[in-house]
Image (cartoon, rainbow, N blue to C red; front, side):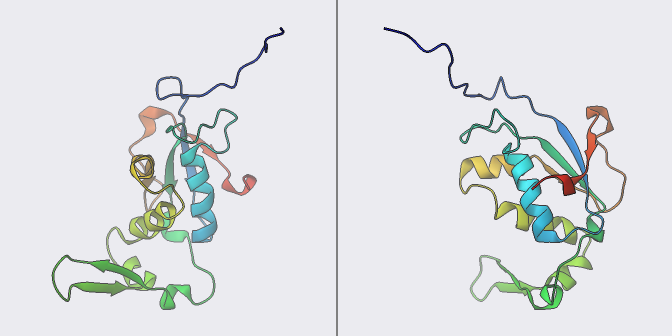
Length: 153
């Protein structure tokens, strides 16, 4: 009986080749940027993608304040959070969040988080996202490579 000369390779945490990637958010739509970043974090663009393993890249988003929403989402979209106390439901819009110190960080993290798997793996993957408002970031030691996010689908 002939045996197969090839095997399906399943990557684990030790054999995953994770890279550091810089993405410029200048003139990018928030939702479309978030979907591409979620695929990068998940590792979907790699040929060795394994669904149950963190095999994606570490993504650094720079110029986050220059990302924008289309239509009236800047003023009409509502983010809901709950403080944990009775009557503690709080509502904010992206326009209000932009004025806060880490507002764009929260906006982009919220968008990417919704596109990652729910559960333990999704929470672990979200730790691979780093968002900065300007062009400076403290990850130069990792030698990240800059990519053009518009080349990805």
